[in-house]
Image (cartoon, rainbow, N blue to C red; front, side):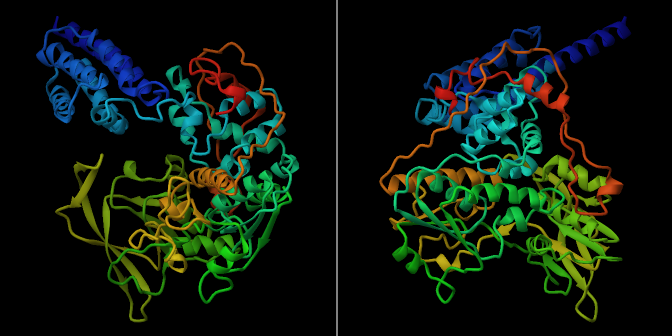
Length: 612
């Protein structure tokens, strides 16, 4: 009898787990345009209907949480209500007798973490946030607002050139983003309600693999306006602004400090992730608009090749997009030793074609982001004997993409997590001889993630000859310090119009404004800057195209597994800088295209003219 009861309880727990797992997916896939608190309230009501009513936390506690959440949604709550709701959820999570109670409370807590700003808007302003109005989740979460359902539909019709030009309508780097975009659009894909998010980046890669971006003719430029705009920096943000301003009919001159365009796309991302000949396809297409002139090897600033004052005198507007081009270091003893390098500098040299030789050497990489993974995997390809990544938190806390971490492990990189840097040991010739770490222990939550503290364990040394510091990037804004640069963050202070505060003709965007971030975020900033500069110059340009997006078909609700892109075998790819990622097959791409629910037409409202 006891055994039967246990089996029944286990079966119920499995069913409950599956039931609540759908809730978690729905929380993550909450569509913009619908208040997330309203959605969460409906989930909570559904969960409460599943309770047996025998224990107080479920029976009474969830009802009380529901009432408080309704008050918040209706704009009747104060901050005390919010805090009491959170405290009650923690209590239910700790005391409920079954998964219904503690998982339902946990989902509410996840929604508080995910949508904290929305809760605060209801409490303080008694209304939804202003941005609750975007209709299509994937478009909303793309920083460049690319029409994703549109280009997926075009790929499904085998119209690859049209798909590329539709991407270009908002993002002139379809190829680069096909290789390295962190695809925030997939996080809220509503297909997750059925099975799994569409592999949007993989479909973009399929399109640009069918036809090179520089073989697809860009739209015609508008009539020349006679206006001239200077752009300082030839990275993704600067080139995006140049592309759109050129199409609007303005003359653009790009000042690039190095001898090639691309910024950190060229000098910060290794060839095995983004082949430079493929990057050049995007850049060639951008330059083919015809209104863009590039001046290479030109530094801007007092005492350099040209000053900002000269630019302001010669041009109608100036856009500063200098990015975050240098690396930060850890302030530990021995950091001045021979063999300690910035990760950004190391990757920059590789981008210039200067491949270091680490034959027989042991390499330590400090950090847990994508730059750290790029360094570690590049060190492997530079013939290092051993490569060890040291990170002070857990692997799950690393900011690098999980695929990058997995790729590094497959290639033989060792991860030493929960270890903090202490010092770098040197030999008598001031050369690196070892890296000393202090073990850490995971601790209390701060700012939404668990902190770490010193563990009661002895320090230990990792023998090495090379140390690569990959703990972040820095902005070289000193030459522009009088143009509203924040001294502490080294970023430009701008108005909502991207204009630098206090200067009519100076605009800024990208990493030098919001700090080191993703490529797609820099592209989005460049697009917005172009629109603002155009308005400042007295225009309100739009460029038209004749791309007819296919009419939506009836949704295919068959459950499909997600098509993941595969990599070349680790033992093969670790020996060179050739691209590691394979593309989709035709059949895989068509299956992923069929999964699109066409949220631009069904369920989220209609986009006028197919545009966001």
